Image (cartoon, rainbow, N blue to C red; front, top):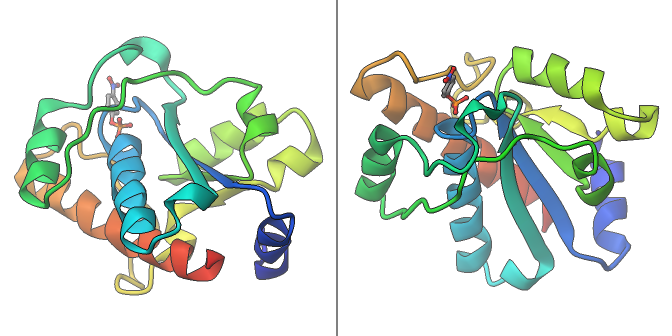
Length: 168
Ligand code: 4NP
């Protein structure tokens, strides 16, 4: 999705609908949802956005975010309350931009997209990194220690900031 397509979404005058996607929807994507919800609130544009998150693996459906991610996010003033849910085919119809946390999520989402137009809605979070130009994804912190969660949050904040700047 290029800048013109992003601008076209805004010009439609409708809400901009963004879905963040990772594997389990308990670490990275609910954190991205929380970060973006705060950013649109702080920027005074919350009414113009709908933000959600989902996972390609449905095994954690109904769960709160991982306790470690909630603790690290809380240190940054974020209270993560999303309940995990799997990505649905209807998400490709509802959302304008679907943001994949890593290459595996990106490939999985593109394979799932019902139409070529829907496929083009899928972008990588790494496309929006400006403070971390060496990074090419938000790595899965699930099997990491504290530094993995901090790194994921740093990358997510970077990507969300840039994405929002491009949208408003
Ligand atoms: P996430 O992390 O994709 O950032 O939510 C994971 C959480 C759980 C699993 C994998 C990744 N899991 O396989 O259970």
